[in-house]
Image (cartoon, rainbow, N blue to C red):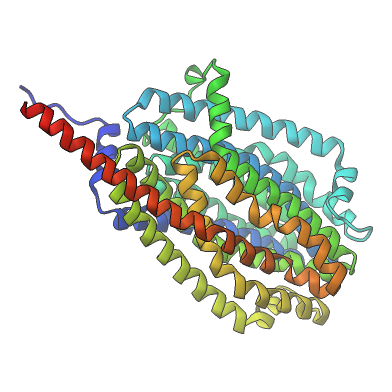
Amino acid sequence: MENRELTKEEKQYIKMTTGSPKKLVIKLGLPTITSMLITAIYNISDTFFVSQLGKSASGAVGVVFGLTAIIQAIGFTFGMGSSSLISSLLGQKKSREAQKTASSGFYCAIMLGALIAIITLVFMKPILLLLGATDTVLPYAESYVTYIAIGFPIMIASFVLNNILRGEGKAKLAMIGLTTGGILNMFLDPLFINVFGLGISGAAIATLISQCVGVTILLSMFIFKRTITTLSIRYLSKSVKTYLEIVKVGLPSLSRQGLASLASILLNRSAGAYGDSALSAMTIVSKVFMVIFSVGLGIGQGYQPVCGYNFFAKKYDRVKEALGFTFISSSILMTTFCIIVFFLAESVMRFFIDDSEVIAIGARALRLQCIALPFLSLNVMCNMTFQSIRYKRRSTFLSSLRQGLFFIPLVFILPSIFGLEGVEMIQATSDFLTFLVSIPFFIWIFKMLKEKQQKEKIDNFEKFEESIV
């Protein structure tokens, strides 16, 4: 019999189910961390350069972030939903179904992005007021959101393409597109804001151009067949069930990101009650913690395809090893970053803006979040594990804790008791409560994996006995 060459799907399956789980998590996690860090940093570069225009302009970025968080929610819903399904389908060697999932998730997400862009441009002023813009912040927010909204379909496409590549285990390819766009944005921001004199509109134009470049690079990976799946209209599913499955699997991401958007809006409105200084400070704090949180999230997203492939290949011991390693690594990295920021809180705030009131408010909020954030890695790992193995209800519940079930009541309770200090401690309090609730779920995951591992051993032994007989 002739030795046939292995297909791309078969090579990837062997790599994901036989290589060292720890090395796979590192290999997939490092590019993902890099991508997310660059993305967070170029979000910060917007905040940095816009902050030089004053605290009202800085507050405008925070207001618009509530809207872009909705786009992220949709992008992550279709991206993570498609990604989790693709890794599990490839783990079951169902490549045709994986093709349908990739194409259907991609095109559906773009259409939703275009629809939201039109709604935003038509109803811009009432939307921005609803998001928490004050009278002084509103003109800046209108100038900024005009170009950001045009890029909504592109932004969504970027999230979906990135996640599809990671679902295939191609994290390096995903990194190339995102980092190129992110780095480009850092150079374009000062060019458009200062050199061309476009102010806050220049920051938005720079972001739009960078996103276009990043998406073009990500799409080229599919066009030049460097991927397992293909994005083609002919692979679009005619079954509503396919789209519902993508949304159902991505529901935890929709819950997490959608609630993050709502939390951002509520926080802006709560901070705005204490003036532009408080709104500007909380905007900067949120962007700083996006960088730290992206480290833990990046490792977790590098872990997800390893989890999905191996769980559905019934290699439960490998899932346990990957989970334990990822949790410890994520906790150590996030704790290290938080310690650094805790002791340099004033310097971090001063890097963005030279306003003593903004610095004082932001430094207190930074220190409080530095204490609580490292605990959050437990919730991230539980959430991503449940999402990867399609335990949708548990994953959705856990993802709704931090920015929803805890944050929303706290945003009303704490400021009413402690005033501005209450605004500063909302996120930290929510993070710690989320950690406490996640503990029993983390214990349950290991117990479940152990039971499945033992059952698989028994089933394999019985099959072996039957083959002998």
